[in-house]
Length: 253
Image (cartoon, rainbow, N blue to C red; front, side, top):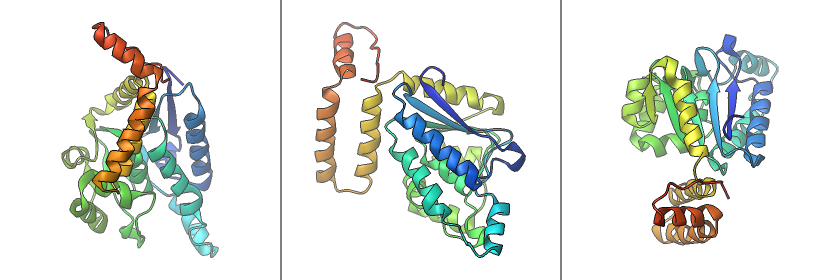
């Protein structure tokens, strides 16, 4: 951890960081540690080598199919809790997409709050290409990023999306040169780590709730969340700093 940012790196570069059961268990454990560590105020997720994450390891998957285990319950046991934690964690999560993000790898990126992509990055919603429905939250996150029509196009056709097109569609926050992606994403994560952590958590909660509820219900939750935020030390200190024309220093409390 550096500057209150927990960096989690998928580290199977020889296999484009594809996800075995072992990797998924380790990823979930790392995310849980970051979520529960009060010293962590932002999370950075990236991959090693030339890929962000190529999705499910198909060699392991083929072995499961041959053994009659099907999906081996990996969607429920692994992918679902990982994505739920990414989207609901009380801290901002930044993805540094250094290369290919395909299938569940793309889903992981979409579940993060902000995405910084290398100009060499590519996204592929490859589920239909191997006769599968989307998983890892892609049906929920993708249409909230690009709309139902675009999400249908990307999922049904499965055509790769390069970084420039991803930025145009709103899939990513920024596109930078390949040698700057990790630095840029880390700077963004540090900026978030220096911010009002509890207000960021409330913002994530409000956005997720408002996406599936009517305005009157969203207004009620907003009021409740403001009651919580107004009682924080960060709000009091920031208000005092504003009146004194000083820059606020947030502690996450």
